[in-house]
Image (tube, rainbow, N blue to C red):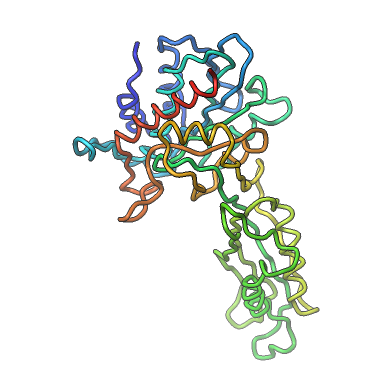
Length: 373
């Protein structure tokens, strides 16, 4: 049967996937199995849905990736407007079921003359990214075949071709002093007061000589304290205080490189009787690192020429960072993270324009034809 991306999108947005992706994955597999195209479909042990269209002739391997999970709570489906204002509303409409619908249209419509096209849809991008990470583990349960030559990751980019994105690391800074009675503060070491001084020291962390520096595409990295916790009694000098920092990184900074540099920076600013520990958040998968694909890579040029908008960075960290370690990678899709009225993705007013979904599918299909001709 022929594939209608908007009909699929309407069904997908009606299918909750904020707590469990099983129903949404069943819909995806059912759609791929019922397609007219010759498609091999597999759900691997990590929950990825992997579908392949192979020309049987040597050529490039292009991977299309996006995700089927959404953030809570579920927001019901609505169809609203007409013409250029025709929109699909509801949780996942732009992040990332709209991009998935466009990718499915391109994947099922493409007829690669050489090489192969793989659709790899992960189950948990919004949480731990165990699905995408498993695609690159040694002994992975998935089989992506040969290393990809190009990757397009579906996210809401307003049809711009995003060839770079900051990474996101998270760390907890723990400051330890010594308890004492609040009536005799000089007999203890106040961890809350020391933490306050160290919070101010974050402001010049990126002024140090060995800093990673700004990226031409992404600009300078950022470091933001987000939560603080400390003390156990109102009449006691606190012996411990901790705060969490959010790091938006640029290449080539790694998570461990950031942690070690921040620990050195803060220990140098702390009094000798204060202990400082910096620990990365515990994850079973690698952090989403920054990436930057040169603007003259064939996948960037082909997607731009096929109807993509401007070439620019993406505004959020994505699983694209995993793929970018092995192949030129871009982020592309219909919808917006935010518009002039405020947040769109992850918000109650989430929506995607029908015309953008259709144009995205056409642009990706034309890109596949260009790369696999």
